[in-house]
Length: 564
Image (cartoon, rainbow, N blue to C red; front, side):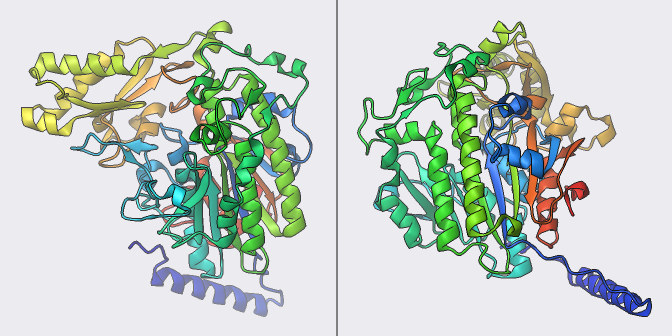
């Protein structure tokens, strides 16, 4: 087990320095600085897929109590970026939690392929644990943060304030809840889209708390079944969007049409996974998570005493809607307007139960997204689709031509899982192929494909001085963790994306790395700041508000302009 703590020597130096400050203060007849009082409750609120580029476009439709409360009353860093090359849910939540990059925290993507294996590794799956929840979730794989190799804000809170400091984390996605909750939460809870239940794993909970069991058993989710998802704004407000019901939208994934309004009950019964998957792809998925969070605050007495607690919430439905319908769709505009209202309701609830003056709140995204390629083409911005299977077979055929044919079902590549290409370690070893030669050939062939902007061979970056690296190469270096990253990194051109889904992310372009970052409440001072900051700075900054050191292994800095 890894223990995240300061060394004894550092503690001794800190004590000695404190004693010196106190002595000098007494001699000079002035008081020592007052000890910073932490909030009773810190909240990390992540909106999955929140591109800064589109935030201003959405903002004119927001009310005063949600996002605009953060914009007007919080510390707003308008140019915050993830400084690595695979902006996506797993790495994003891990960086938010740890204050460092994938090369340090180990979560290089949502999934990866380990050398010698053709089976993808889910970044949080843990088959050594068992699922806790109702019988409906019994066959679901458990999850934990065992692949996260850095400490988190949650871990540091426990180190600093002991077990009386409570940590709860919740989301529809397992990786979001687990990574924000860290290594030792009181509870990391997520939702099964197949069973319609909240669940956890034995890593944090031997059984669900009664209040969470009640949320499952009373079938809170059923209240949405007879509802329709219709527009929250007058129809003319959506004129700025792409056409409604275009063929490249992917509502068909959950057997939905591509236009509003949408019904949940069409073709399905309440207990059908199809209904749950539709709920996840709608604003009502957020309602489910916020209801979980409200019950957590009340039943776990979060923020009820002077020992600070931490509540982490991640809203996954925005990401699902963005993937299915694209950032410029009617659905995404409506999703953001409804999310704004839900956040306003959440802040009102927090004010009533804890008092916002007792809370320190962070609001941000885990990644952005780009335009749907077809929409970009309509705007005269180019764009297109890349066939991932075509990339695989072109590279594999080139390797066969150079190094020899293989029997059926055996390949020189394991997978193309953009933005990474994974070579098959077993095949290369069996055939005696020089790895560097194979990597260079794959890179050469891949560069020739339409829609490819850059290709980087990861092994060629090793040992190079930082000043010799291009911005893209530096981002790739921040994504390299032994045994987890692929051998060849692919950067698509702007407004290009893979086939098979409407919208996405996973490039080092600003549309994917750039997210809004807000700090609101106790310990923070309002103001909008235009300078570029790194998302690694979030964890040290919320740690400063909590009057504690940053997480172990954090590489970010405290954003002093945010701190009172």
